[in-house]
Structure formats: structure tokens, C-alpha cells
Image (cartoon, rainbow, N blue to C red):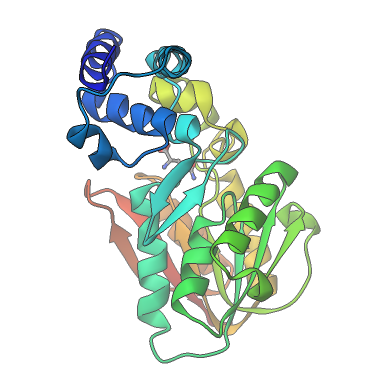
Length: 281
Ligand code: GLN
């Protein structure tokens, strides 16, 4: 079978299985199987595929049809300006999370040598993107999942910031190393009872540890703010990702812990998504 026909059949199958990006996904998986860039496919549509590779392709397509996210199948995801390794143990980097990177860069335009802490570092996408932009910043990433740290450590090597970052396998309650100018976090913020209403691709495949924000959805945010208030320097800034309906409750927690709210930003879907605050007392 040639490339064109294999992709056409696979797209049809994915479409029947309710995968909305059925063409793109069929192409991305073909690129993976042939270990070629996507444009190679368009220039060689009549090329015959070896039997072994075709089997592998069908295997991946079958997995995609069950809802397994494309990022886990190809093992990588673009975020900010870089490509990050991802495994099933980390949350897949999302475009709305780039808001944190954007805001850190905005507030640190003329700053040098700042220390940045990422609480729940996951794949490392936020912290590493910041370190790539600010060549003399130093980073610390913590996560309660050891497997996440293996991924963020790998990403820090491949993206060449390993010498400026340290990772610790710890939950926030037991962490007390250092004082920071900047703290960033995309903590789990989905209400426990809402987890079952997430999209199939998310709820069946992404780590619950990175999504479950407890009964009220803000249990982890509360912990992050409380502990950040001890770990942050006076006038240091905290950048948090939040759920679409959490603005008021999180602002209250921040104020209660001595933070002044600088701004609340919306994502492209016009949902409140990121809060920037400063430790003032
Ligand atoms: N934005 C993610 C989602 O909606 C949730 C990320 C998180 O809980 N930190 O799937």
C-alpha cells in the first residue's frame, strides 16, 4: 500500500471514531512511522510502505482511535518555541499555559539573575521555556511524581539548560529549599467530581495527579499559595494558572496570604486563566 492510500484509510477510520483532527493525526503518525517530516509525505505520496511499517502504523492508528492523545503516541509536544518530550506521566503542555511564560517575560524584561521556582514542574515546559529566554536566570522545579522529573530532567538536557536548573522529588508541603524572586505553577485545578466530564482524551489518558484539584478544585492552589508565601522573597511575583471559574476564590486566597493582585489574564477562549500577584507583606 502506498502512503496516500494508507493515510486516506486511516483518516476515515479516525473520523468514524470521532477524532476531530483525523487527517492531521493520520499524517503525524505516518511521519512517526517513516521517521520523516510531514512534508516528505506530500512529496512522496505514491511510495510503497513496507509491510512491517504498515503494521506499526495501523497499531498507532488503533490507539489513536481509542482517544489516546497524539502527543503521547509521538512522544513530543510543541510549547512556546520548543519541542518537549512527553510521556503518559506528564500533563500534555497546553497553549493557554504559554500565558505564564509570556507574563514572566513581561515582568522581568530588565531583570537579571533571578531565581525561579516551578511547583508541579511536570514536563518542565514552563520553567525551561523561561530559562531559554533569560540566559542568566536559575530554576528549581519540584514535583511529587518522580517519573515527571525524569521527563523534565531529559528536556532540560536536550534544551541545554541543565546547568541552570535543579529538580527535587517533593510535594510542596515538605519543600523548604531556597528563596525565590519568581514562583510559577500550573497546579491541578479541576474539581474531583468534574474529572469524569473532561474530554475522553484527557480523562482516560492524562495523569489524574496533574488534574485533580480536590472536592472544591482549589485545594492544590491553596497549598501552592500558602507555601509560596514562605518561599518567595518580599516583592517577588507569583504566576498561577487557574480554572475558568476560580478567579474570585483564588484572589481571596492570595490577598489572605499577603499578595497584591497585579492582573488576571484570559486565554484565547476568553476564560480567566492566569493570575499575576506580588508578595507585599
Ligand atoms: N487545562 C487543563 C485541562 O483543562 C487542566 C490543567 C490543570 O488542572 N492544571 O485539561
